[in-house]
Figure 1: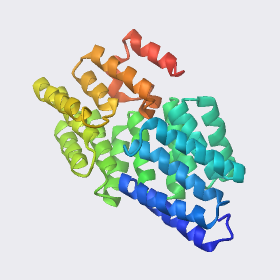
Figure 2 (figure 1 turned 60 degrees about the horizontal axis):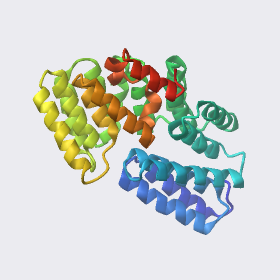
Figure 3 (figure 1 turned 90 degrees about the horizontal axis):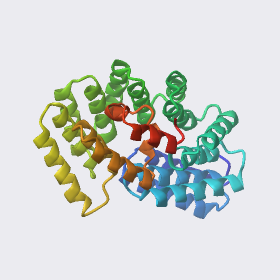
Length: 321
């Protein structure tokens, strides 16, 4: 699409194939194909959106620091728009940056709306828009948008998993399990599938099942800090604080060797009832611009902090109050 160079188009499709695999190694492979597509046709706007979305996801998969990844994503999205302002994929790329990094909710809403008007059949726009809607507390609208994404691309593991996330944030655990079990059937080796399955079991108070899912996630990951933290949360909720604090010490030791997201520290301290430490790590997450904070309004693991005035202040800083 949108290039006369058939080879460039095929390279772009290969890039999206790898991008859809949703692992750090696969995304790196996809970037190579997007770069080759641009080498074939420097005016190929769609290939720049592939790079934008790859850099954005590398942040999630711990392949790039937040600022570096998201600023690269912004630059590539803007380049795509310079080449073709009518490209839904480019508006979607920039909507994601506005949502998950800038925390600029009005701009994100406008860009998502523009993308969907330009191409109502673009499943990624529907998927990412559903995440934006759930973060804004519009859970029914989010689930409706998620269903449209599934209808458009029923073979996508990522989109099926997204339905699990949406129901998890909506506190609809049984519906979440239904989608996540299907996602695991579609890709049994996905770290994300097992992690979210574990979080949903945690929401249901099924600690054995949660721990088993988190162990699967850790075994499927080349950077298992979040899954390890989740196992610590299970220990804390089971009344095993010593075990949970041992996990904390392990994460601290790892953080001296490489970057470890503050998110695991937040959730583990919150599960232990150590609210002061949890808020210290929330402040670090804010300073790091961790995209997870966009879901502050709906994240179940933070329920124990909601009555604290510091939580209301953080919502205000995020413009989510």
